[in-house]
Length: 97
Image (cartoon, rainbow, N blue to C red):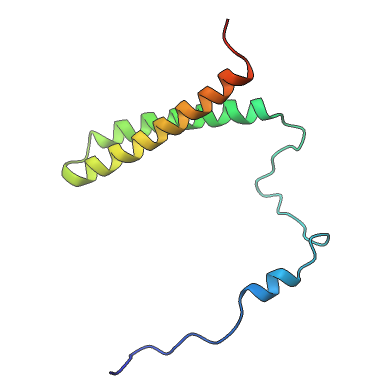
């Protein structure tokens, strides 16, 4: 059987990354998160981001029909479940009442 595309080269792509010393790696500062930020702040930000994504997905689903709408509503439900999980962790860190 004729194969129109050649086989990829026989190289080990994992080898170069393993040889890099973790001490010499310099992380990119393009998206910098302050190292002194506490976990509660991260969780609160995640909760707000998920709540916003939930509203955006819900609003956008109104413009779709059929399977596209169903797909987006499934994504929205996943976002909502993530938001509920983050809220539970926040409640566990600082119980209401």
